Image (tube, rainbow, N blue to C red; front, side, top):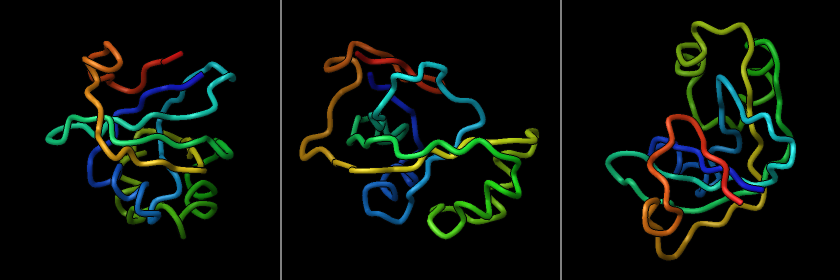
Length: 123
């Protein structure tokens, strides 16, 4: 099973150029059968640009999570703590076997979905 995640374009492209090896989330999908993530680059791109397999999923207090992921986070420490400002714990999804699409896909036409606020399941 796969999920589609809405990711800001600046971070979505960092996943595929290899500078961002973790995707951070405040909340995460509950289904344990999810093995890969389809990346929807949000506005202004508004296209599905690729996908990746899930490595490990970390769920830790913020200091531990930052220490585990900072070298490959693709974000600044300041941004990390601002993003999680109202949380005690956070999630980091490890990016494995990424694949960028040669031709980006349309969320509506190719997946019959509207942009998800957080994520949407895809079979």
